[in-house]
Length: 572
Ligand code: GLC
Figure 1: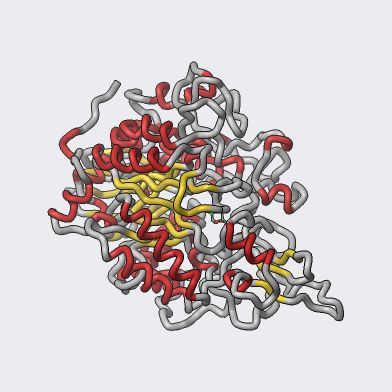
Figure 2: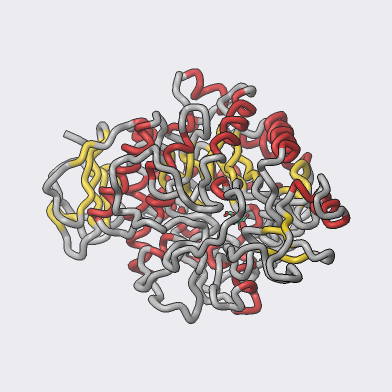
C-alpha cells in the first residue's frame, strides 16, 4: 500500500487555502462521487453515505481537493435522485441526515471539501408542493409554483406547445382536470416556476440549511434550464444537438468573445437566470470559508457561458465545449485558448472535464467511430463501437493533458481506474428514464453509472460485501479494480496520482498556457510554468525535445512521443 502524502493534508480545508490568499476553487480538482455507485456499506446493492465515508481516505490518497456528491436527498429515485421530494433530508437508501453531517465532518478532517448537488429546476412529482398543486384548482397559488397551462385545440387536448423532453416524448403531461404541466425531463420531474418569489425564497432557505451543516458549495443541476421564455413559444431543436442543449455549435469553431449577444432559445440559457445566480451568490457569500457555486450549464459558445461566472455570479461552470471536443490537436488547442480567453475576460478560471454521470465515459467516447450525441449512450447495437485499448490509451493521454491546464478540473469516479463505458448491459437491467421514454431507441446513461470496482477478487468487486449491484458489473472488470492498480507502475490509478501530485507541486492550476509552436499538426504543446506538455493526438510518433520526463501517459522512449500519448517535461 502506498502512503498518503501528508505534507498537503489539512485539518480543515477551509482554513488553509484562504490563509494562502488564494481562492481554492480557482485551481481545485473536484472528484465527482455518484453515491449510488461508489461504495455500499449495507450490502443492498445501492451505494450509501457511510460507504463513501469509509472510502474517503482513498480519495485523499488520490490527491483531489474536494468531492461533489450527486444528489442524496429524499427521492423516489425515478431519475436516480435528480427528482427530489425533500431537499432537507437524506434518502433512506443513502442513510440519514446524521450520516451526511458526519460525512462532511470526516471529509473536512481529511482536508477535503464537500459539494452537494442542488436540483432547483424541478422537484419530484411526489414533492408536497406538487401534490398540493394537483389537489388545487387551475390558477391557484399552489399551481403557480410549477408551470401549468391549458392545452391547445378546441378541447385543450393538445399540449400547450411542441417542446420535447430531454428524455424523449412531450415535455407536457396532462392532469385530471385537463391542464398540462411542464417537465423538461421525466413526467415525474415537474419544472418549478422560477419567476415565483415563493420558489426563490424556498431555495435560498434550502441552501442555508446545507451551508449551516458545513457544505462547501453546490453543483447546480440544469442551471441553464430554469427560466422559460414568456409565452412558451414552439421550438424544434437542431437534430445534431445534445439532449441538454450543448453541442449546437461546433465547439471547435470558436469566434472571439461576443459577450453581449443573448441566446434566442426558449428554455436553455435564458438571460434572466443571471439574476438567480446573483441572489445565490449573496447567500453563499454570507458564509465563511469560500463556499462555491458550480453550474451545470450546457451553453454554447464559451463566451456566453462565461457570463455565468462573472464576479457576482457562480464561481465555476462545467466546460462542456471542452468535454465535447474530439481528440484532435488543432481542435483542442482552439478550445483551450478560447476557454482561457472567455473565462479570463470575466476574471474567472476555466474548468476542464472529460466525464460525468451523463456522458459516455471518456475511455470509450474518445474511440467512438460514429456520432453519438450526449445523452444517447452506447449499447450492444450502437454503431462505431470503440476499441477498448485505443480508448484507454487516449483517455490517459487526454487526462494527462487536462490536468496540466490552469483552472479547475473535474474527475468522475472510476475514470482514475480507466473504466470504460459498460456497453453490454442487458436491456432488462437498464434504468435510465431515457431508455424507457424513447422505447429503447436511446440507451441513455446507465453505462457510465455502474458501481465501481475496488477489489479484484471480492463480491461486487468490493463495492459491498454481498455482491448485490443495482446495475450489473461487467465480468471483465477485475483489471480495473483499485487494488489491482494501487502501487503498480504504469497503472491508470498511479498515473492520476502522479499527475495530481505534480500538478500541485508545480502549481499548474494557477499557471498560464504559453503555446509552443511548430510541434506538429496533431500535437498540443505548451508550457505551464515549470512544466512543458506535449500531447500527440495524431497517428504517428513525433519527435520530442530532450528534457527530464515528469509524467508520461504511456511508455515513452527518449526523443519520441508515440501516437495518443501525453508527456510532461521539466521546462528548461
Ligand atoms: C442533470 C443531471 C442529470 C439529470 C438531469 C435532470 O442534467 O446531471 O443526471 O437527469 O439533470 O435532473
